Length: 264
Image 1 (tube, one colour):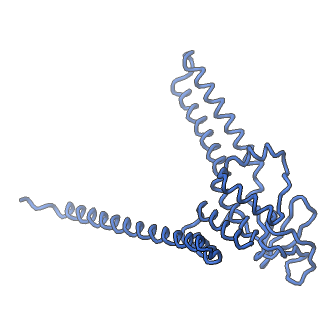
Image 2: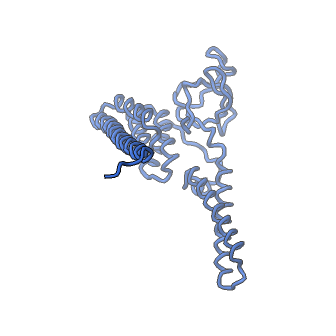
Image 3: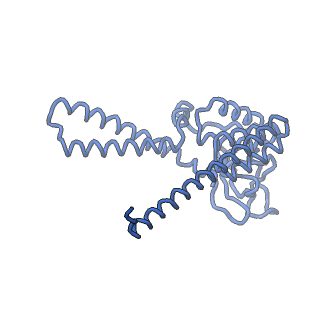
């Protein structure tokens, strides 16, 4: 048998090492996924057993290890709601709604938590418009805008390559371009109207006070209430400058008493 040249032998050995590495990586990924699933199942078991404090801590740990997941946020909100901690519950539900804005169980539990915390928000716009804007998540609106823009670009390339001189092609091109344009404008308008949501925070504590300056002993200007939305501004030390919508209350709120809806 003719021996393989050294360069070919080296290539075969490299391929073998690569395959072994991929196999080991696959085993490692499967093991990590199994560990994460078992941690989530353990948290669910604690919840079902009525140990809501342990369940909440376990769900928080799952989020740290696995990253944001709608199911974990939803279950975390349920655990906090059972504990009567409505601020953290509303925060968890709102974070889940970033991913699954149309989930009926999530929306029902969020409404219950807001009622229990007396944190019903006054709509800043027409409720019907809010329903349309909130039907999709901001990420889904962004993908619609990107898809519409790419469609318009593709149609432009088709027109440039083939032309629309043929009558049979012209109606389809114009119809598709019109639909893409409508989607593009609608998506851009939705993202513009929801632009302030990136700075939304939720008040976690019922006793959290907005203060005149970023110090614990500064004069308290008012208490926004547990579960209320606030607009987060600059941060100074352990405080955020906040505006409370539909009120004249604004000032400094301790960062331990508020959290951004969009997790970092």
